[in-house]
Length: 596
Image (cartoon, rainbow, N blue to C red):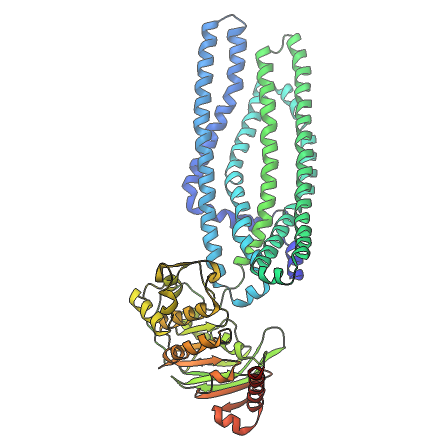
């Protein structure tokens, strides 16, 4: 994990036109609204430019001549301009945020859809907290750029162009005096950009580390408390939190320095205007109203410059976030993965492995030249020591990973030619660690498959004897269960997984240590459910308890990634090989426990 986090830390550039182009592409569906927002910004900018001009007219044409009625008219016009400006600024604020939220909705849906298409190996390499950060914090940063940045920048440009034009028209020499401090602004801005260039990337990185650490420790809280690791975890989190705080404090320091510097420079410009303009008034070459208007325009001149600097910082943050988001979006999905409707294809359940080799990393092969053939409706068990490759076979069969060599056939068809979604519709898998979603009991059996009726859900629950505990729940099948099935026992969660598998009625059933965490009483209860579940379908059973697979049609014995033995329970015992030794070890262990 340290390596990948470090790789993230050095990603990207301060500004990447390719990334910016991709970001702005999310505004394309809303170009009409963007155009309207730009028009509104233009009108609002013109309204702001009208204010100082009306002040000049009021002072020079009416106050100086004692024309109170004319001054009243100017004030009424000024008030009308302010009302129009308010309305257009309201429309602008609403539009740019509406556009930003819509674009972020689209991006959030796109990245979530893509995450679901990624191979399982991606989640082996990336902590959950980091993936969550991509969909939440990073996208939030992009929202600010696509709303306050990408659209609002036009308003600053319009305002700057308008102010420069008006200043030059009013008095070219006085305008040059105002512009004399611009090099100082540019130098301060350049220095500020240089200081904050990498800080946003560091902040995103440290947020991802915090999220990953929190996710891991909240899920593992029972283990944390069991082994009294609260203080150590506190110290680790304190360090992560401190690193994040330090990074943010650096940005606060930069902002606290930059904006006062800009204000001092702008104050210097105002002082120069008062000095030079006051001299022109004394020489009777400039009116007092023009000087007041000039001061107001000069103050307005520096605001968009500061805003543009802020937009640059928003862009910096967006670049750091977009690097991570597009890195996820550019990760190759599962081969052949597409969003497609359910198919009516019904597999027979014939499975064949032909000289299959597989390694999770480099040439460290977990499976070595594995070949076997399973007939439709056959019950085949896989046994062997931990790490022998049993679960890997199931993962390859479901295309969670792709084999390095060899072929895997389903009903005579290479599974690499099948869409993964279509392929997996032919399987149900019951794991040792059952995942229960936040929702009702019925929802956890149906899993949003509307083809499964309420009657089928009830029948599946009855067939696996899950109705015994479901009937005792306050709302039965509509009883709400929390995340990961808190409040349900291990056995109850296991029975729910059996009901889920039966409701989907697959031609191929995979049981991966499905009863290893179940107590003896519950195991006896679900033996009949297993029989019902495996009836008339191909069944692949991975088990450590050899007592649960004695009735299998065939048992395949794995050892160090290779098939060493195959046969029925009695045949393997008679052979006196690896299976016999495993059986003797378990039998002796059970006898010892019985005596104890």
